[in-house]
Image 1: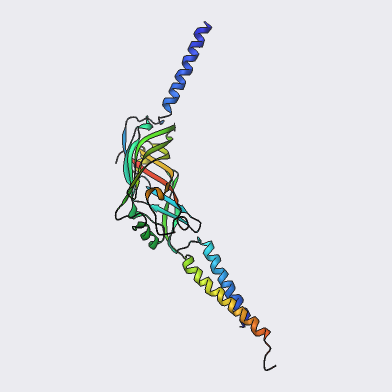
Image 2: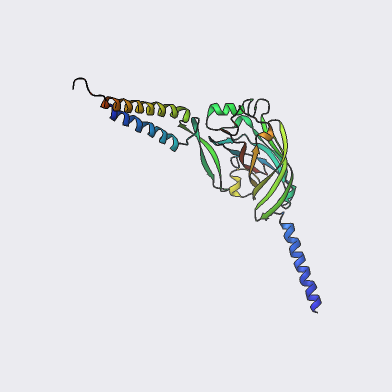
Length: 216
Length: 90
């Protein structure tokens, strides 16, 4: 009798643990199956904000003109895939002359390389709770004509369609935020002689805010 | 107004210019727009928008403060020099 109870208890524990690990990949929302999320400013302001920290000056900038899409299965977040692109020409720092330099051929060379993109090839470390999740997206980051594989930790929020969400866009709404750094040297961005390291940071801190909807 | 008073006024103006620059972003280059944070009520997130606002950088405020402080120093030196030198009419 005791042996039977022990076996049943072990089975319950095993099932619970198994369900727990499966649920780590799943959002607690009613929908399932892969859905295409298209980024749109109707949902929220799609934007990359970035900060260059250097001994002589800190520069804050934004990059808009963000577009792209990704597929997401709320019950299997590790299957998330997609490509996000931003236009170099939309970069702003609050100083028109500096903006022109930034897009010029000594820096990002927007004429030759007009976009910066990130293509997600795998997602790991997913931890979901309710309608939110965190994870790490690994993929190909392309800037200034150079492509590098990088991993970016992200936070995701999934809001099923409701009367309130319909005011912004049709379908379920998804928001993704991510913070990462980009080394200018890795992408062959040399800048004007002597500027990087004194007036412009060698590494740029980037924050991404992406908003999309499944009904667009 | 004597030279000493004028020197003090110029020095205070020069220091004031630098304090104004330091309090307004202390950037090397003049900003014609400044970033402001806007909150998204639905998602509880914040994004950046640009507001038209002139914030002079060091390339503008530095020379102004420099001229004022050099002027103050010259006037101060001049005032001290004329005080030390006895008047011929005395």
